[in-house]
Image 1 (cartoon, helix red, strand yellow):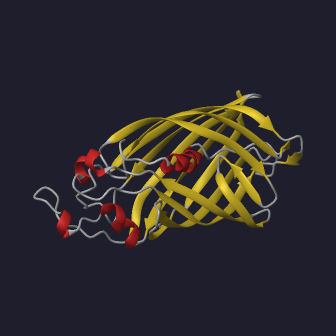
Image 2: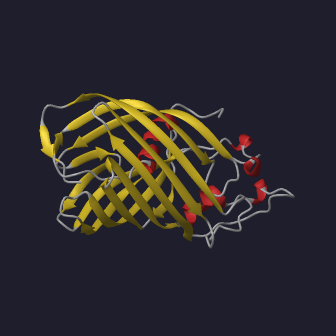
Image 3: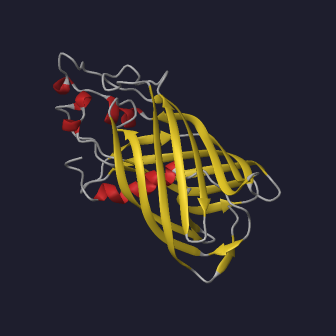
Length: 282
């Protein structure tokens, strides 16, 4: 899209990590860090509720760090503040892409949607895990503050996304393949929904009425991902179903469809790892 600055490409990693993120591995000694790079193909709407879908070919970094406090992997970048056999408290990161309003029929004449970054704590409650740690069920409770990415960042509200996460590692008949299923409701503050779905009187037209979004329930999403780590490369794919049925902003004139499917595939080549080995406890 025209008008998208280089900074949103830096946010692509967080978005991609979220899509390819629900996988788990066997508990064994692994390198402290791994480094690689690759390419991804994505298809997703301009924003939740948009009826315009765009496809992208994007570079994707592959970086894994298995430190005691700081971790970086397909589950994102996080600092572990508290960890025991049942509960883990992390700091986490997420991001959204920008929208150039002149390229979106529903938003023509309105201000562009800036790329955003979301940061906040995430409580991970481990409900069950197999003896070999290859299969696990957890309840994740991330709560994030959202900010626009620009020269003077703007706070645009809060997002809460409780979800169940089922990880299946080394599936019978498919050695080395990992499958993840993640799903749950979304909630947002009035300020957050206002940024994406409100229409001011100045932006109203005969085909786009003025609208004030409220806070609360924001729909449900379900994501499934598959991945496999080979000696010199990694491959992954995901599909996400998103429903806005019952969302507090469902009646916004900017919501053009109530559900959609987004998908992506990625392949990365690994070109470096540390000699130091550490237990992989994830």
